[in-house]
Length: 342
Ligand SMILES: O=C(O)CCC(=O)C(=O)O
Ligand SMILES: [Fe+2]
Image (cartoon, rainbow, N blue to C red; front, side):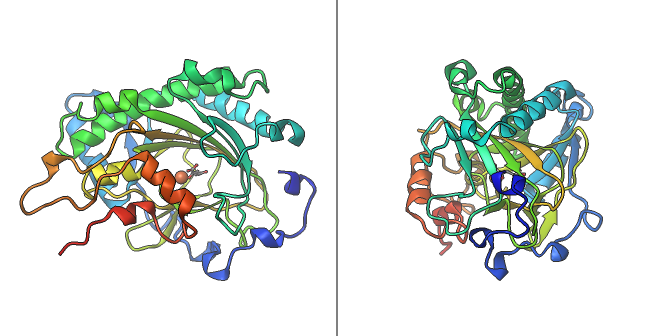
């Protein structure tokens, strides 16, 4: 934000990506050429239409590990208020935000800029604040107290996202042929982290990224964006721009669902491009099954001919990987769990 506000005419060297990693805006597939799944969640509550909607979710999860949802039950006023509060937070004087800065990924509330991981060489065009969000009463006192509306407005959104996550996990379990309640206990006890991201306007958007390619570690991410900027990788390794759809929320499958489904569903690799004129905000509600829990493929999905394709893992394994790995961007954590099929 400080760089953009000072009107730099060029992206400083530390943000410039090696040519092979630049977003090459022209070669990404835009959404006029390909249609990404959009699901009307209100149909899940209609007995005659539920199974068809579950089928649509199954196809979207298999093909993309991604879909957008409308009629998701979170009121538009709650969504708007959360985005307003986030905007006001990033507009605070830099000295005030810097009081929350930390590189320690274990901190329950932390503000950060540029560097995605301590091991990354390249910087990214993003400021963010991340905070633990579930159960909310436990964490909310630690959240930013400025702007004064932040706790209330982002808190209401976070609680609504938590309920939506439970409904989505039920539908996704069902779409795999598992009991609707298969993960119920684990989602109730699971964790939720809100990553509130701000991507300021960037003088040379073709040289930098807001976030590098990655998949999210947890079960699902529910993402609210203020404008277009997210790209997902499709099964042919093409980058596809995710369109901004008024009132819609984005659902992305994380690594835990990939392992639990034994790879029937894959977590979606995504990145964030930046924009010359518009500051973009996003609220990523990152949901995860309990952090101490070891996740492994669901036994119900395995058979003699279909054995476990992934080893089990826990959140701590993931943290060890992130803190010890210099090539986080090149290799996904989940790929290290894959068993070779001999
Ligand atoms: O800003 C976005 O659209 C994506 C953010 C994201 O991928 C994340 O916070 O993990
Ligand atoms: Fe992400």
